Amino acid sequence: MAFRTHSLALRACAVQSPSTLTNTMETKLKYTIGIDLGTTNSVLAFCKQDDSAGHQPEIRLLKVPQLVAANTIEYQPSLASFTYLPNEAESGDGAFDLPWSPSPSFVTGELARKRGAEAPDRTVGASKSWLCHNKVDRRAPILPWNAPAEVQKISPVAAAQQYLEHLVATWHYEFPDSPIAQQQVVLTVPASFDPVARELTREAALAAGLPADFVLLEEPQAALYAWLETQGDDWRKSLSVGQSVLVCDVGGGTTDLTLITVDEEDGELVLRRAAVGDHLLVGGDNMDLAAAHAVAAKFAEKGTQLDPWQSVSLWHSCRAAKEKLMLPDGPDTHSISILGRGSKLIGGTVSVEVQRQEIADLLLDGFFPKCSLSDRPQRQPQSGFQEIGLPYESDPGITRHVAAFLSQHCSNDGEGLALPNHVLFNGGVFKADGFKDRMLDVMSDWSGSLPTGDEQSSNVKTLKGSEDLDFAVARGGCFYGWNKQSGGLRIRGGSAYSYYVGIETAGLAIPGAPRPLKALCVVPFGMEEGTQVAVPSGEIGLVVGQPVSFRFFRSNARQEDQPGLVLDRWTEEELLETDPLTATLTMEGSEEAYVPVKFDSRITELGMFELWCVQFEVDGLADGQESKKWKLEFNVRDEG
Image (tube, rainbow, N blue to C red):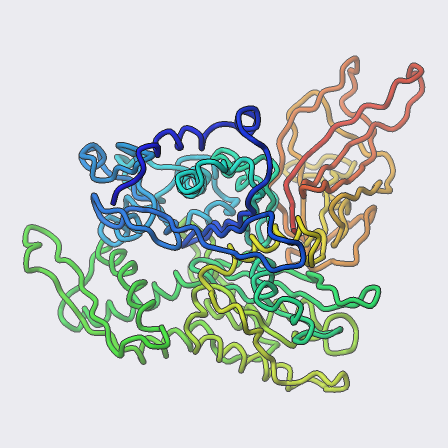
């Protein structure tokens, strides 16, 4: 495949800072761009920004050139979110060259995905899940996890940056006169990403060349925006006041749940994001592994016991088999082959046939089992010792996770939210109709078992119209950006969590025991962007002059808590501790160990949560002199 000769120059443009580009090129916005940085695939959708107001934009997908084999580049509608780290011999022979990256030290895209089956110890997958794993250093080179020492590893942040750089380079190749740093860009993230994961995503995006004012949008909201884009003004015929929609997004590595309600304001229907679920590491990857276990038993029946290398290879092979077999028009059988090990590789391939129905039954009953609304996921560990790695869910039953989420946020006593009337499915898993049908059947059973005084129908319906499940998030992100620019419909909701700071209590020291901690609410659930609140409290001592750890908590269960509320105790189900922030704050001219302060909380227009520590007014300040302020800043954008 031939590329224009100016590709290398465009690569240089991709890494220029936004300020440099602004000084050298016209700054007029031309395009709105939506990017889905997915666990298994990344997609870029775009539309012209100057489309006439009141008309639907024409949203298109960017075809992404990527290696599909050595020396072979093809355009595909998405970029596989995999990185292959070749050895020195491979990277030096030019087989992995891209027009904007000769002799690369890594390969991203479809070839990297395929290499996962051949060389899993050199392939990075699920980096997005690692990006939100707070038990590891996400800036450290840790991937591929448990790879041999000779493999040059990369960090989860670097992996995200690589995928975005590939998309940016492609954009500059296709639109050399419209540098991405001057476009309106919306980048989607899971609704359940904590503040640190969002900040690391922002860090990777800026390093890849996205504009400094790009917007983060929750993926389930983006999926609903994609549905709105297909409906136009007719969406009001499908939804009515008092109803709610469950956005059920099951992708390659995660399950993301969001509840959106339909309200009325000034005679107009409005959409509000009412609740988001936890970050659940269960999805298509789990299904691939379940299929691999079943297929491994077939190999064992033939006398072939797979070693660890072959088992990982089989996992990747089963992914392709599942995607083919579970399509509505998929084949009845599929052949899976595994290379032999040792010196007799030639002729050492072993193959088995897999039936479509047996895989469908295995995955349907294992991941979407029938259950009651009172059922809960089983979270008990299976052993006293566990390998350090991603915190995958111990219970793969997605329906039980949905039951727990809805039970937490909905009720049948007339108080609070009712169970959802509609489901919007998103994610590649739901390309198989059987999974959607089972989820609808289970949820309809839940609704049918409740009192019907509110005339809630037991027939839960799916929102149809956006069936492009692989690309809906990117398209929805683009449509949201276009709506924001043109003043169109936006989903409301503010902060998806209440936020708290940890306050160490005063008291006598006890050997070996930390002082008790209180949690002070500083951000209420639903706090809107562009607003601020003075947190009512007494004097709180801010430690200065030495490194200290600031502890923060979040909750999507305590939605009624208001700023100033102090919790003396709580459960893990109520409050979840996020990553602490370690810093040394200074106070010139003071020898005190701490400064008495109060808090101001702000959420900026760009979704940044700023916690200001404001010194209590004290005597002795000169005229015009203001109290000292310190700012702790986090990215907690939870609404578009």
